[in-house]
Length: 206
Image (tube, rainbow, N blue to C red; front, side):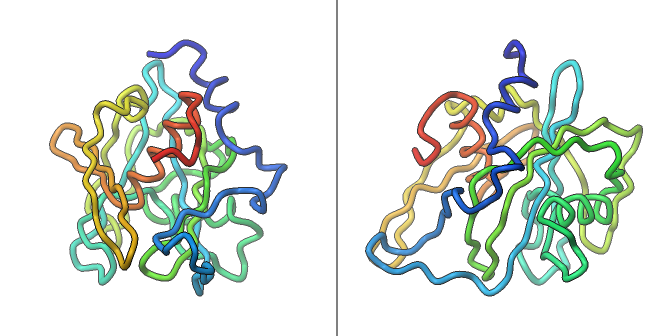
């Protein structure tokens, strides 16, 4: 595993104190088209388990959900009026979905924002998590949880790339597989963003 990974992770994310205004917004619109802001905001927790060999935790969404059933994702969801911040949203959703105690999470910072096809602007919050003995899964939303070593996630050679056309613009979509689990779409794009940041590449390099 990379040395001093905690320090590298902290240095790679955008500090919470800087806010979100300067974060790049990733979307799938033509470059010369004025971006339309999605109707709602959401936040996800990128849970890095603080272990000797660090891992990132993912959920697999329940199959009966109307949006993105069965897909790998991070715990998270829509911002509510009573949430104080995006960090509050991410921590609340992570506790509701998989039982992560907010007191066991040290929020480190943000990745770039992503506009989803389901009309959300999503802010990833990277947090260092003390792993519990078992996850308390809300079966109404989550089918299962699984983890991928941080070292695997950071290895760009493990990602499969494919070109997709949307309107008059082509996109590169990424996916990564680990022990029978596939992560793709928006979640994989967040992993690429994290990998770029930790490996010192341009954060907008796809």
